[in-house]
Image 1 (tube, helix red, strand yellow):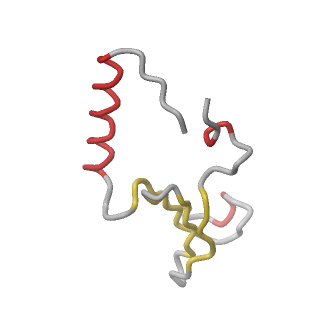
Image 2 (cartoon, rainbow, N blue to C red):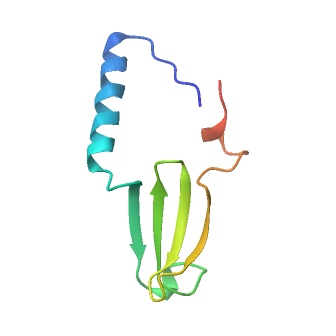
Length: 84
């Protein structure tokens, strides 16, 4: 993903944002959320979603702790993955 930085202020803001993200990350997990109720998703079971620092998204069954799947968080067709 290409970054278009046009000023020193933007570069400083990006640097600070990366430091905050790194400080809040626990190990290799940048972000996580728990879906507790079966009616909230089509998976029909409680799951834990984690965004890893590698750019992968991991889905774990919270009852059995089994990793259901792990793969790229953004598909190649998403605009997030395109370079400008």
